[in-house]
Length: 161
Image (tube, rainbow, N blue to C red; front, side, top):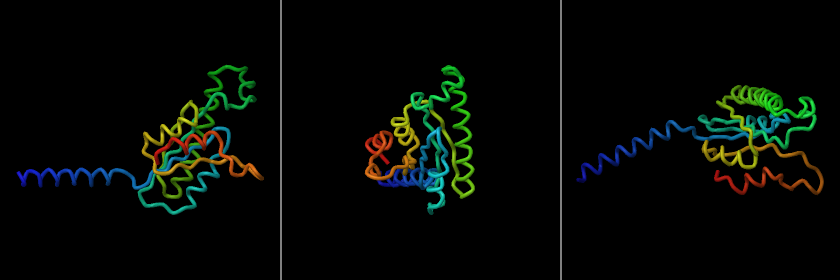
């Protein structure tokens, strides 16, 4: 019985070691907005030192209500062309961000979702098992400097990492 237990324990330890070897040491989720550049937040990531096995996921969550009015007017309020335009912009932004990350030695991938960013960031962070989340903060000055946006508040309240 003791021999069987020892074998099971050795097997369990081996499986655990193998799972650790497969999982990157650190997973960075970078959530950016489709209506602006990701350069600032990606710069904040690449200027830091990270463990060798760090990987990144660049996330863009597009909320229809946040799409600029100008975009809707350009396509006469039709959803399909707006979706295609936003998807194209998001693909350009994520491709550029991935290039920057990979040039600095951080393997990266991207995901684009049409959903509320407040909930999408939390959901993707949980599914992907993110260790740290970078969210670009709106530029503020004066007394509003420490006020969080609704996205930042929701993520801080609900995320487990």
